[in-house]
Length: 291
Image (cartoon, rainbow, N blue to C red; front, side, top):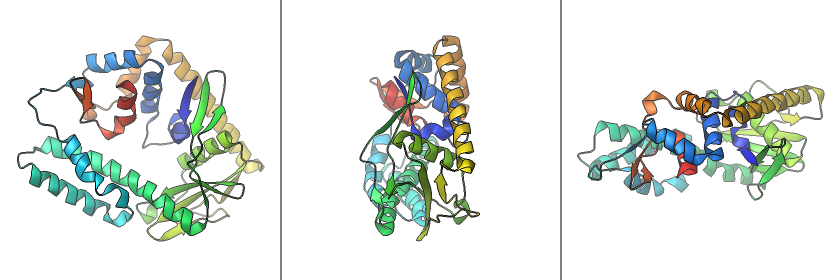
């Protein structure tokens, strides 16, 4: 049974400009046939071998970052933390070049934002007295060949809660990609009500009513939300049909790779003793599947 994580539903349905649908398709193709995709990526130069004498900094960078990881909570300090870590990396490696600094910045920008969101979930749950989730993997068989899987953030009574940490006040808003993710949780958990709660600095936006920044309570038993929910399911079905079609044709798989990987990101990883190093954060999930 093939599967898609709920967190990738918005990408699958073409609603998330930050996570292109082509990259999600490639990840699913890799799960279906990892040996083929691994060979095609190496043959195409998307993953390259690295000379054993070339110095790599990824492990050292991750080691430095590990002392910050669990304490990243203030969205206004992310840039300061990034700069501080880069300065430490430069100090320990005076000969590090611009290219390696650029790779380090890509890693840090992605990791800081992700970990800030994760770390803020607990404070929101405690402050709002929600029931913490992430304890059960929810599954839903969407059709004969695909299922959805996911962990929800929290709940209160019969309402599923999805928590979003915003880095700017202007980002406190109603995003269709967040709505589609919530639809995925309602489907996998067999629930009808959900709410997307947003946090910026010390402000928490958790209105039950819709306004210019919030969806309020999303209730798919009501006609307004049910219409959107049914549209979501049709779009997801079309996506799965398309991926099933791609799986059957290697020529289309090669085309999918070209669409999914930006030229500026090549190589997405390098190999040393068949172990991936310098992995571009944007393709981390893909590389983990392949190696």
